[in-house]
Image 1 (cartoon, rainbow, N blue to C red):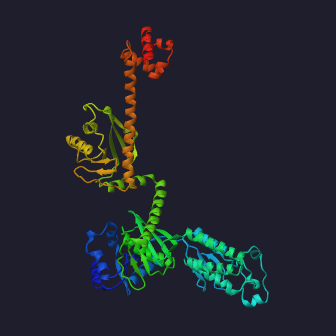
Image 2 (tube, rainbow, N blue to C red):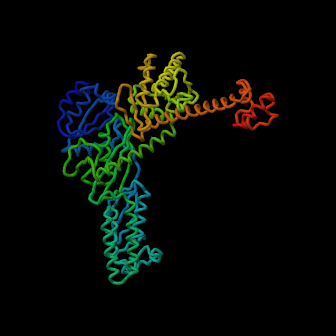
Image 3 (spheres, helix red, strand yellow):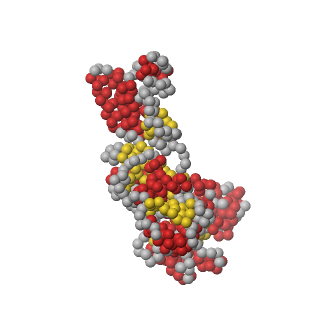
Length: 600
């Protein structure tokens, strides 16, 4: 089709639910979408090019032919879209990255049914439960069932005729108590099928029904004084209770629901699914989706829900989701966005699983590609702190003094969110008398960035001031004097509540305590504290040593320097022998030194 033919075709589209398909010039299917109004949805791709992102504009330029399929309802369109995407895998559609064959637990369609696990779903009349996202979880369930209920594992055809003819003999499984010998007629089919019914209840999440049956059997055994049988039944009840306690129990009032949540970033999304039956989470799975056209979370969830429900054989009528879905509901399906209560807790549990999966995937990738972590972290800081550029170069300034004495300021430098210790600098305060933190900050900021400008060393994208609004204002005065207040972003961090202050804004910004951005800022601040305090202690100690030796009569500053240069500390000077000291000072100075330390 040429451009005119495409426009004419779109103008003639019906305003009904359906699925549309885009083909390129080689008649290759490149995109499939669903719509509750085909004409409006398809037209939106062509009416306003500026509203589309770059990837979608590229898709539109490749469209050469359009066709569509009409359906009765939007839910039908939703399901058909999903099936067609999985079948044709168009280039510009999101693909669910999940092609595993998951295991099922199957109760065979046969006399005295066996309970097994399989990866093949065969429509032979057998009853299947699953699939299970975790093979380990499936085996835990099977082990519990086999401990509670004696079941046969043999391949014998246990028809009534074969049993009556005595074709089979009991095996070791009978001897060790794992089977009750139906092959020789030692267990009736009626009794065996009662156990099978209880197994189905457990696999369907109706554990309380099985527990009640066991309690009734315990009571009956006790009434007929069969205490050994009662004890064995009590052990089974305890085992069932232990299994139930390990299951995620939400609320028995929530009978049969599906829960979906999503966690995404610029390139990927992670969708978590929880299957809840009778208040118990019986299945869970998280899948990864790679974005193709910068799809929204709503669009991605629309794609994932029908796929996961089909994969896990779910027919729940109620689906819990984190936001309103743009899908018309009917009697077979209802979307719920809970605000509080048990359903809200379920949604939070699902989101926690999605976030954990996302974090694990990111960590695995970033271990192999450290530069990706740096780019992501800088992008996160830029977003959280509302910066205009990536903060590849960050500096933090902190003042340190003890009761106004020995004031010193430290400047620490981070490159790509990591310390660049060779660029750390210390400033002894020259113009401020007494403990004036604001004036000290003003002096250091002026000296630091005046020097960077003179050396043409490049300014940081972000300057962090350790302190609240007062210290921030003082720093800003110096930046204005230098004419660079608009060339970098300056913020203050107040330690008590970790508030982030911006110039001219009286209200602080509070970052999430778990935020990686906040952790980088805290690391900067703590590193500035450490660096400044270490220098401050060294400076104070040196001045203390010098002043002590200076007080000895007859020993001048030059002699003090000689003593410290040779013995390294005042303690070693005091402990040195007369012979050692006479190599540096005279006998008269030695006598004065000994006299001084005897009196002090």
